[in-house]
Every structure is written in structure tokens, then in C-alpha cells.
Amino acid sequence: MTNTLKKVGFDDWFQEQLDTTQTEIHEVARVVAVHKNRYVISNGEMDVFAELSGHLFYTADSSTDLPTVGDWVYADFYDEDTHAIIHGVIPRKTLLKRKVAGKLVDLQLIAANIDVAFIIQSADYNFNLRRLERYLVMVNEGGITPVVLLSKCDLVSQSEVDELKKSITEIAPNVRIVAFSSLNGDNIDGVKEALIPCQTYCLLGSSGVGKTTLLNNLLGSEQLRTQSVSKKQNKGKHTTTSRELILLDNGAMLIDTPGMRELGNLSIDAGMDETFSDISALAEQCKFGNCTHTNEKGCAILAAIESGALSKQRYENYLKMKKESAFNELTYFEKRQKDKNFGKLVKATMKNKNR
Image 1 (cartoon, rainbow, N blue to C red):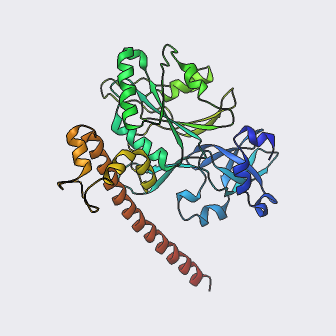
Image 2: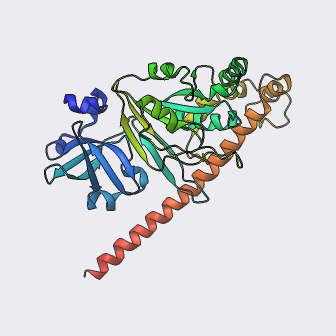
Image 3: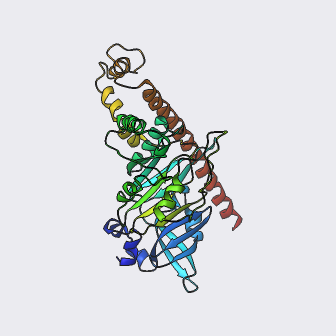
């Protein structure tokens, strides 16, 4: 392991994942930016534009087999290190993914090998606990440590900030919360203190919560373009349109992601269990093992809702996400089967054509 690779996050875990047959013929690099189908990779010394090898592109069964920002890859550098070809993806430590926006049921990779996800909630009208729960499910499913950043705290009183923090703690008791303001700089140092050298972080949040403004504060300059929030629609305008890993002055790495208006999920059992551990624990206390939690006597979940120990809105959000995930998984499985059958048909047709 070289010091240059360590600088961009390479550690002993990734060293153990390396395939020696690949390292004998290729170099190791990290994907630091993705612009649609174009990549930028870094070997710790320089950033180079890269493209996928034909073999990697055509043998990929799904989008999850292709690189995303944060991935470690096997690559070859050409033309005095001005261009590179990516030949393979090194196994991932963590992976952040979601269902693509819209009606299409497919996976979208957001970023890989993230240590900590900063989930930003703003203290204004954009504050939404149900949306925060969805982010927590996605982050916990990926095996990533969540930290909640409460932005725009200059817009409300300290007592209101305390109430917002209390409401977050009620649904995520073990998650660290950092309240700050990018406008007046209040507690920006608290955010900086959470950034550890050689660790990889990402910023998650809906449009308008202040991700790019925060990143500019952390960079100490207006390097990234920001836009105002639309007061008419109460929605933020998209500023970030691609995913990019940025090396900060203290040696930490931060990925800014596009604002997400939709947070559909696929295969989120582990994330649901961790995010809604209180509901899972209550379900185990029900009188009947096959309790549907709808009208049974002795249902611990219904009793908790009636007593006020469990928020009805939280439970309804839990049921909604479970239902969405089950539907999306079934549809995704059917789609994959169709894709595989089509691939077999194409190969058979090409084989017969070459005879």
C-alpha cells in the first residue's frame, strides 16, 4: 500500500480484497467523479479521465457491477497519464444505493466505500422526520454510520433547535446530531471536528437544505455554485448535478450528491431493522406470533400507539416503506429475469449468425 493511495482512503481492508492476478497487470485507483458515463480516477497523485473497458461494460449484469464514485478499481494509464481504462471494480466495504426516480424499477448507485453519511435536515419548513427515516434506512442498509446535520439554525430560536434535536433523538437515539448555520458560521467548527483524515464522508439531503453551501464553508471558498431556494414552491433548486469526491484540507474526503426528491428503496431489511428497532422490539412482545398489528388483542404495537409511546405517523411510514420495498423487489426481480433472457437471446442470435 502506497502513501499516495492512503491519501485518498486506501487502507488494510481494501488491501485484503485485492486480486493479485489483477494487480500484476493493472494499477489501483479510486473513482473520484462520475459525469453520466464519464469517470475521473485518482492514484493519489493526479486525477485522470477514464472510460470502461469493453469487457467490463459488456459483461456487467446490472448497474451494480459498474463503478460509482468512491469505488476502488483496477486501471491502466496511457498517454503520459492523461487517459485511463478501467478494467474491474474492487469489492466494496459499503454501498449507498436507491431505486431510480420515477416509475422505472432499477437500482441507482450513489456512492461506494463511505465511512460516514451526513444527512442534512434544515431547521426551516423543509424539516421532515419521515424523510429522515427514509435516509436512515438507506444509510443503515449500506452499512454506513449516519450523522444528522441540522442546518439553517439561524432561522429559528435556540429552544426550537432543541425541540428539533429532541424529535430526531426520539427516532434515532444513537445517532449524533450537529446543529449549525452556514449563513453566520455558527458551529461550522462542530461539523469540521466530525471530519477525520483519510475517512470518506457524503452529504445527503433534499434540494435546498444547504449541502453545497456547507461544502463551500468547509472548503473555505465559493468553489461550488449555489442557488436560492424557491419560495413559491418551497423547494430547493438542484445545484449539484454529478457526484464528486473532494479532498478537504484536513485530509478527509467528502462526496456531494445531487438533491433527492424521491427516496425509493430496494432490499432494505437490515436498514429497516436498524432504523425501526423500536418497532421490531415491540413486534416481539405481541401476544400472537402471527400478529398483523391491525386489530388483534394483545398487540404490543397497537398498545404503544394508543399510549403515545409510538408515533402513529412513524408506524405508518414504516408500513409504507415495507410495502414499497416488497413491490420494488418483486418488480426488480422480474426485470432482471427479462434482461437475462434477452441477453441469452442476443448471444444465441450472434452465435448462429457467425456460423
